[in-house]
Each structure stands twice: as structure tokens, then as C-alpha cells.
Amino acid sequence: MTTGRRGRDWIWLLPLLLAVAGCGPGVGGTGTGEGYGLEFFGARRASVCTASFAGELKCPSRVVVGPTKPDPDEGSEPVIWVDDPAAAQVMVRINASDIELNAFCGGVQFAGTWGETNEGSRRFFGRFSVPGLEGTALGTLIVETVEGLGLSFALTDASGKTVYGPVALLRAEQDPTLSSCSAVAPAPQGGATYR
Image (cartoon, rainbow, N blue to C red):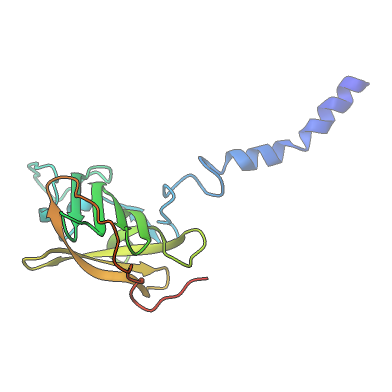
């Protein structure tokens, strides 16, 4: 009689175990989007080598016959962008189709991946943190080419409000020397406040 009861006791756990297993890697997600919030923005991962600024990256050269798109996992070799190679306060690193922005003196960080929405909006989708924000929030990083000045980066929150930037950065050929941030750290631009 005891064996039959044990079998019935665990059977009620089966739906819970199946639900937890269905969440995929990590906690609190579907297992897709790699933590960058692509689903929230209605975007899908794409290759940064399809971006308008791809000529500024180190994308693989290949001969393509016909209208084929690059593999979403195919991206740039590591490339670094800084405000000042001798005393960098802002640094952006693009590797494959992923990006990290660090405004060391301002306390702003962003990590994301290149994606595209069904409407054709292409940018980096991810998560950011700023002073005064507990944890991280979903946001996007918009990148544009600045004639003769490299690339411009502007961080926006999920509602499209500018949180930081735009800031123009130059490509660096090696890891920069970081600023000591002895000057007063600038506040995030755009007037956004988070609590």
C-alpha cells in the first residue's frame, strides 16, 4: 500500500517539473533572445554585418551571388570605439553581433545584440544600467555614421526616450588607457530619471 501512495504523491509534481523545464536556460525566460529582450521589442537576431555602418567594422569578406542574407551568428571581429584612446571615459566593444557600451565616468552600461524588427527597425537590443536605476532595464542602442568622426551611439529606454548620448566615438586599434575619472562624472543625458 505504501508503494502505491508514493507513486501518487509525486505525480502532482509532474506538471510543475514540465513547466520549469519549458523555461529553457536560465530563470524567467523562454530560452530565446539570449537575455537581450529581443522578444519585448518584436525583434529577431541578425548579423551586424548587414548594418549601414558595417564598413566601419571587421566583417568577413565574401562573394555572394543572389539575394542571400548573412547568417545571424556571422558578425564582426572585435572592434573597439572610444572617445579618447589616451584617457577613455567611454568605450564600445563590438564582437560578432554583440555590443558592450561602458561610460566609465558616468556609470552607464549597455549590453546587447544586433537585431531587426518586422517593421525593418535595425539596432542593438539589450539591457542597460544607469546611476539611480536599481538593476537593469530594457533598451536599445542606435548607431549612426558621423562623417569624419567615426560612429555615434545613442542609448534609449524601452519607450524610446534618450537615456545617454548621442556620443561620437573613434575606432581604436587596441585597448585604450582608461580615464582616472578625476573630473566630475557627467550625468546621463536626455533628462531621463529612474528610481
